[in-house]
Length: 418
Ligand code: 9B3
Ligand code: ZN
Ligand code: ZN
Ligand code: ZN
Image (cartoon, rainbow, N blue to C red; front, side, top):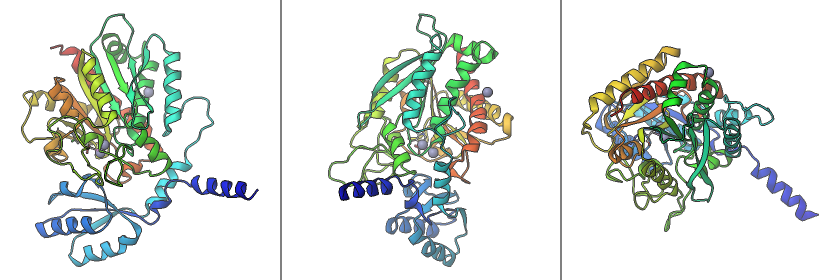
């Protein structure tokens, strides 16, 4: 009897919404104007537990560029005091992270019959959604497993396109490389929905699906995504153990074999940009890379992240420009213009190294060097008001506008077959 009581007590405690650990945490934005202020931020990052949102690690902070970071509640007032003292102006983007995290979980609703694309979904729901949409559209959708995660879950790919019996040129798109960027898997699902629902009625989509296949991985980092639902909403990395360290996980977007771990990544397993023990050490990364290596007709690679509103292309690992830089820049500019047409959302675009930050091991650079000459990273909404905690009310407008950019790129690819 007592044991039973104790068990239900434990269950109640564990069922707590993952957000409590962020009570009183703040997200601050500031812009260091000189070396001293820069040094101050780096010092603070070493002595306090600071979670860098944008850029994703303290090494990537530079002068005259804004930094967004989360400070734990206990440190917040001390940091704010010290910032004031050295005259570094800051803005409070989020006053209490817990409040926003809780809002996201409150909105979750599981008992609707039609799949709601304007909500974030947990992994089990996404998994059954894949099975359902495949069954409902057998002439357009096929469903495969491309590998397993560290915790042995399946990593799936959907092939979306009119089935012709022949191998068609393909566009590979993945979402959910980073766990906390929830808008990313939401977009992949939206894209598949739009594709199957508008085939036959929407002219652009019909032409696209007749002429190519979209290979879509809705969630790459499944373990991390689940962990961001159950335990830590702001988890970024995979969930693999690191021998000799208590810290868990590798940054999957620093783990690809593209000048691996040379810049903009960390060799410390406790850092958010830990590059892993070797290139492709992560099963999730190997699954994506193997899928791309084995599918012969991939014309474009697109990877979806958040936040910052950017369209990036190679390289991130060097400031050098790739041979078709002009063409990539042209495509990115037009994609971003198409996106802006809908709600006026402004995106910046350019090579990763100069547009966001120089860093190696990213999937877009790897896909490019593998031979896929059209390779893009999208950083979806917003620019920091909510950051990773983008409210569900923004899923629809974000996905609708992003569709226009992806459709532009896809159309470009089929009209430029070389
Ligand atoms: C980073 C790299 Cl290394 C790359 N090749 N392309 C884009 C990015 C930006 C994303 C990251 O992993 O930090 C944004 Se969340
Ligand atoms: Zn629509
Ligand atoms: Zn990301
Ligand atoms: Zn990002």
